[in-house]
Length: 437
Image (cartoon, rainbow, N blue to C red; front, side, top):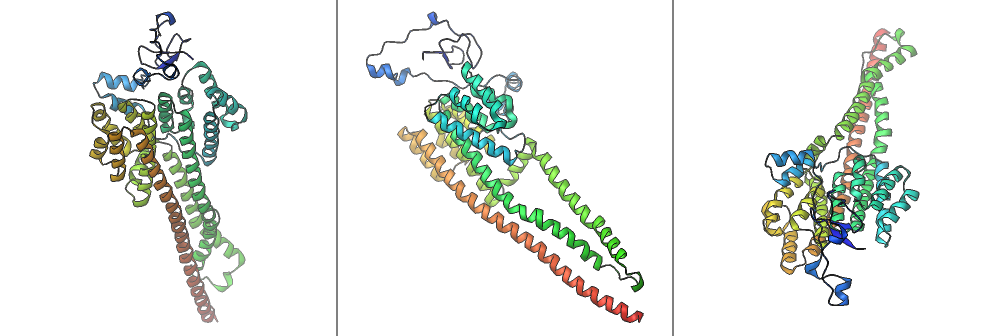
């Protein structure tokens, strides 16, 4: 298909279009398009020379925050970071995570097997998850019109993580949509596996252990009460006493537990609270390292794929920083973008901020020296991914052990208290009976 470059943003458009799909500015008429030089060989006819290869430049759509920041004279990087939210806007359910993993896995498989994006969306509209078929229809409409699919996904931002949209924008610019779909599907699969494993460990303790404790606790509290007269010791008195303890002890604990869960869910639906969570988690020994390696994996893989698609380093670094989706690392990664635009090597900029370890920095420097920077960044991302998988398995084991130890401690404390209270009640009842006789 013949393509033409937009004179305003440089995006590739079909020769049949009259307005650019990216910036919506008018394009040159077909007869006004500058003619390409004739190929000197059939190899140049199949693949243009390196100097003649067209390159799509990433330019975000103008918005109010970007315009306001530009009017104040702020840096473009700071304006884009303020305009784009790189933290989730809501906590997704486990069923939604599973549907999204299936959706993107099917999309990655079909687009990676030489199917066009429109054909893949048409197939997903028929066989994909039922709750996501409307999304597949919107993506199909955008693909048939020649518009980027990220514009269709932006209409349903509640379905995605913001770093997914950033990765898809980068994939459209670099031409690696199947790889982007595969990485998003892998991220959803890892999240579903981790959350389902933690939920399975918590299910027994919360839905079986906690109610048992709330039923035993009123009995222990009732036996600790002063013993009444023998004549007033009737079944009705016991039932009334147990119900009073349930209302005063077990019911407040259950209501407080449910309230804490609901408040946590409500706060988890805000980007501010998730940013606070990530900053706290970043300081923890094992969990913080896990979140850091996961964010660096996304950053390096996105940056490598974009550089492979001939995207300028400054634009690629900015999009990759937004794709990291980490409240602590993303601002630091955005700070090095002006230096990269000024010609500072990537390894030097990353080393100044201490964002990568020595091995990853060495691989980055080797890639810059040998001209194979995209491949070396992808390899470094693979190492971070393997490290993340090992730490995630260790974290799941540690979480299972910690939850089990905590539950056994609570159950053991309640059991010991119950035995002591029971024998104390027997002695006090015996003394009461002996004194009355």
